[in-house]
Image 1 (tube, rainbow, N blue to C red):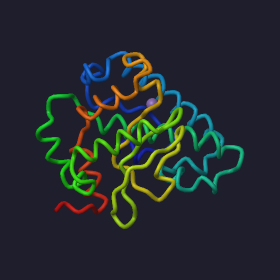
Image 2: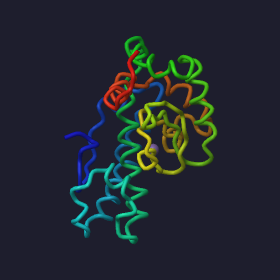
Image 3: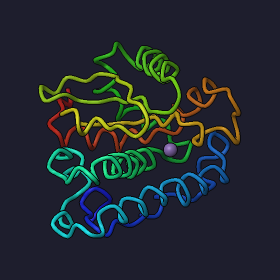
Length: 214
Ligand code: MN3
């Protein structure tokens, strides 16, 4: 079972790398707080919201987020916010990797960034989107049902899953993701994030969902 197949009670999966593995781009303390405190709080609150509703205990995060209207109205908001928080963070952490493996990783990116005009153009568009998020949210590389790729932004813990879009790569631009190291300079955090993208993982999601490798 992986992060996205699990059901109630949801649990926090360990990071697929050490807490300090993303240094110097993301610092160890931020990773501890982000994974062990912020993500854990979403998990705890999601479990709390669902505790008295056993009819949803076999639903995955995607089931919950795609069918939020079928939930009793009193738990729609907490489940929406917290299931989104769990899903978005699990994908964010999973699509990062230690710096220094860029060559193989970048080769995996080619089929996806080609549709934006190459890596430089992709970076420009992703950066522009991430800088445009007002307050807390994410920038995303997503795939639509016709397999077309695009870059979108979402607010808070809203997730593309609920918009019939398949998320390939999230960039968390909540201040908790970068403030300890970068303070208010979101642009520097974004610039460095490009060095620690796990493009192999992103490419795996892309092909598993029917993306064209040519
Ligand atoms: Mn976050």
